[in-house]
Length: 458
Ligand SMILES: [Cu+2]
Image (cartoon, rainbow, N blue to C red; front, side, top):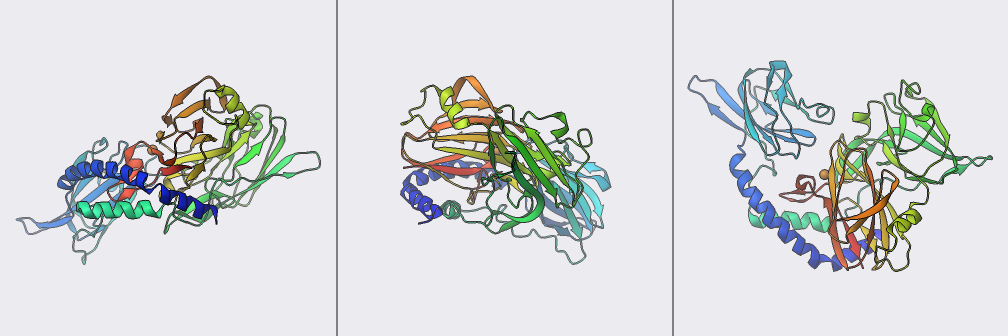
C-alpha cells in the first residue's frame, strides 16, 4: 500500500471529525455568503436616456489577482464595481485613463466611473509590489461583446445544498494527487576533501498547484519549494547554481553565517548570474541554521514564483528536544519527523503550503506519543498565522536560534522571511485540520482551499 493510500485510509476513518469541522465552516460561510450575495452586482448592460449604453463590470480583488466579469465589453461608457475580496488592502487603477479608487480595506466596495472606453485597458492594483505579484488584468473592447457577465460560480448565489455539496466534494478529494512534489530531501555528493556538494539548476517548469491548475513555476531542480538540504556544523559546503532561467538570478543564504562574498546580493557581493552561467557558493558551516536559500535578484517575482528552499545546518531534532526539557508528553524523548512547511501567497504559485493548494497539499501522519518538529518558513509577501487544531505546539526556535524559554502556541504568526520551529507531540487520535487562520487564505464558499492541510494521529 502506498503512503498516499494509507493516508487516504486514515482520512476515511477520521471522516466523522471532518464532517463536524465542515458543519462549523458551513455555518460561518453561509452567514458571510448572505451578506456577500446582496452586495455583489453582476456585470450588466444598461441603456441610458442618451442612447449610449453603460456597461458595469464586476472587479474582484484578491491576493494576488484582479478578476473581471465580463472580460470584454462593447465600446461605450464603463463603470467598474470593485470589491476587495482579499485579506489585505488593495486599490484599483486604470493608469491610461488616470482613474483610481482609494485604498480599499478588506471587504470594501467602490464604484469607479471610467467614461467612454473604446479600446482595451489595463487594470492594476497600485500598492507596491501587488502588480508584479499578479494584480493586473486587461479589459477588452469589442463591438460583438454583449456586456453580459460570464458565468462565474464564485459570483452566483448558491443554495445551501449546493454549498454543502461543493464543500464535501473538495474535502473528499484531499489529499488530491498532482504531479510534482517540492522540498524533497537532496543528498550531497562528497568531494575528495570532504566538501559536500549540492547541484541546483534554476529553471521554469509547468507546476501543478492544485488538480488541473498548471502554472509556470520558477524552480530549483524542478521542485517548488526547492530541494531540502541538511548539513552539519563544520561541513565544507558547495552549492553549484546553474541558471537556466530567461533572466539573471543570484542566491542568498538567508539566516546562514557565510563570508560576505557568499551572501548572494548582486551587484554588491557578486555579479548577477546571467542565463546559462553557473556560480559556486562555497563556505564552511560555523553555526547551526534553519536557513533559507532563495533568489536575491528581481526577488519579488522570482521567490513567490518558486525560487526558494531550505538548508538546515545542525541537528535540530536533538536541539529541540533538549530545549523542550521534558515539557512535551513525548513517549521516548525523540523527534520522529522533521518537516519544512514553506508558506507562499504570491506570484504564479499563490497561496500555498510547500507549493501546493488544498486539496493537493500533503497530509502528515503521527502515532500517539510521537513528536514532529515543524520548521515554518514564510517566503511570501504577507504574514500567515498557522493554526494546528491539535496538538498544541511548543515553539522552540526563532530563525534557527534556540529559545531560552520555549512557549506554547496553537497559532503561530509567521511573517515574511521568518522561520519558527515548533514541536508537536500527538496526544489525541483523529484528523486534525492545520491551516492559515486568515480565513480567506483557507476557505471559500465552495470549500476549503489554499493554505490547508491535516495532521492524522493514529
Ligand atoms: Cu495566510
